[in-house]
Length: 211
Image 1: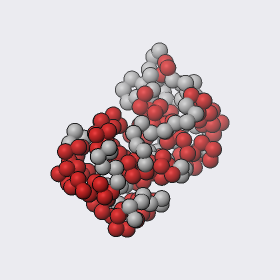
Image 2: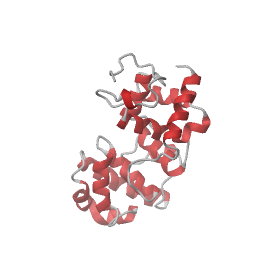
Image 3: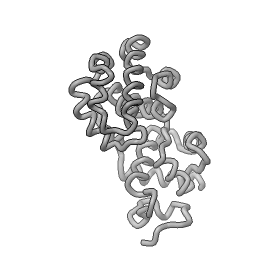
Image 4: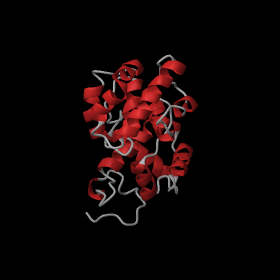
């Protein structure tokens, strides 16, 4: 795909959604971090259902430590892998207090040193909480980028590298949200909704669904 097409795709996505953001519900960088940790192999809807009960009770590192491991588990038990996620969150809260004065670090190295935080989670927090031009590649973005040929790559790191290379700076802060929403609601895994897709004429997918 050439850059003229890419810019047109991004322009259309921006016109459709000028101020995109995550569908996870949060009111602080800490709440976002916890929500993103919980979202691994889970839906945003499922995470929001749990955090709408958890956060009014505990939305700081110390408050979650005060809940204790079993107390935290009682709020997130509806989420997949909740046992390991609870252990990671407790460790992360302890590290935030001991090493970062209870604040969320604003750099990748410090974020990725936290329990349960990998590259994708760090990218989401840096982008969504702090406005950094990072691009977290999840299963939706990986599919959209390969299917459309917008930024094809054999793994998520290759796709991220390609996106950072080909996406103009003016679009970098928002491109993560545009692509994830497009993959979640239009360019879905089975039977993509090509008939309602605003970039169908620019897409290079060879097996478009009839419409």
